Image (tube, rainbow, N blue to C red; front, top):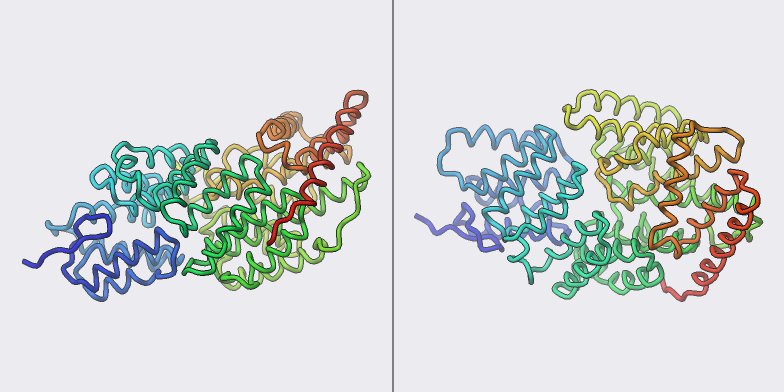
Length: 514
């Protein structure tokens, strides 16, 4: 018979058609590099309709374009057509089983385990590793995001493979190993200078360690690659989101705002305003800016006698106007899909802030019915999704007692929102500010909830990055002030405000060319 061709990992495909094999390899490259050839799988299938690998790539591309109903029917057709066929490549069989678990059964954990099974037999298959890690992430199985990268055969196969170390870095960082994550990301960049996911690994590790100015500069030194090569809009805007986050935590609000307008949303960049990931990044940054400007800055002025706003900073009205633009795009595209839990949480907050309570309420009731239909093993995930939505709406309504009680219940389960620790941090900030402001307004939330506020503030103050993030110290000072701490409290508060001022002054003088 014909000679079967191979993929880029040296494993056999089920096609002898060079055009089909080449399109398949292009699709896999697109996934690993976060490229733009998402239709290459479709092309592979058109060149060789009999190749299961080509059909798998086509279905995967359809999932990535968020057309889940179309993906589900492609997967169901594959499952149906493969019944009783004896000579299907075993790797392709596992891929189909994984996709069926992911899309048709709604079981990301089972899907991740099935992709991991591929790696037991085919350890060089970085596509299987990418999908396995992504689905453990989706399932909230954070330790497995790392352990799948550390499987013996996998780790030893990829010492010098591009793309592997960036995945390892993400797994390490989400499991709290920032230093090891930094080393892995650096190794990834050495192997492939333009690997934007390795740059992303550096961003997470630097941010976690509190290397804010340095982290921003490092990322900016690689940013030309994001413009120079085909990069999908998600990773383009997401890496710029990380650059903006560094500036936000340095209290350089003017720079963060400029980055938002020029890079994260529709400015000079490659943002796709119809893409749910791009919309989610934009809303995440806007809600964070809103928290910092409305809550921290306002109360810093009022209680702590803070300095005046700088001219380059956005006003609250600017932020609301920007939210309306993103929400308008979202309403036309993704609001009904409910494929991204964190997107729902942020949208509900932004709709409420901009005075559209009706849509926020409708979104919550849609998710209530989705959560009811989720399999029993996903109940915690459904509860976290709903609780975070209700809490973010209460926060936007400035009902601080309700915010604290809704969010206290889900704080430990934010990993189920299919978003990184850093992306979900906006929810922790809502919770903390609500707790501090409830106290300040003389309300007393239930003491177990307030104990959570207090212990989260303390655990933040103990993070390695705390000394480098002025708003942490300010928040602690506001908390002491609100808790009416006299005597020691007053001294501690003054010291915290002084520290924050010093750090902020240092950052203000940093030369960072954005």
